[in-house]
Length: 148
Image (cartoon, rainbow, N blue to C red; front, side, top):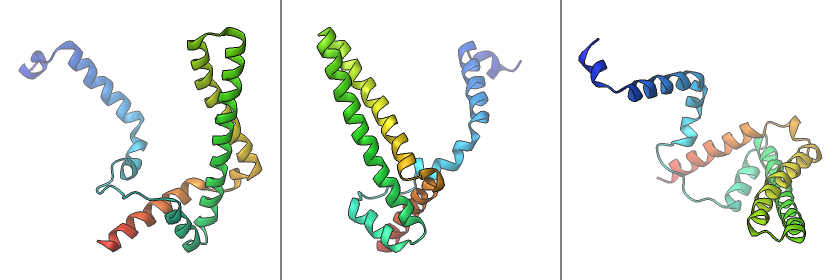
């Protein structure tokens, strides 16, 4: 053994091996680094910028618009799920911590159910919403680059 291997503790060697193991298995995440860690942060954008993209891109614009409309189903589902489970838990248990947990659980389940309804309502399984979101991100980066 070399001196560097001897001087490293057992936990440090274990941690390095653990990181290597999972880095190999999640190597596909490197392709998302341009979205997660951009060179320049994007400026704040609002719905008017999204509407401008939807109007400018005839291919990916309608898919992005449909995805944004489907997200509203998820929000409504989360609100309905949170309120209904919280009310039910408070009525029958009068437990503050149980009510808070039911609020969180109801929001997650209701939001998931709402997104599932939107998936069928808008037939999102036929659209490639991820590529339209990536195109919007690239369009926004180019738009910021043009202003500089």
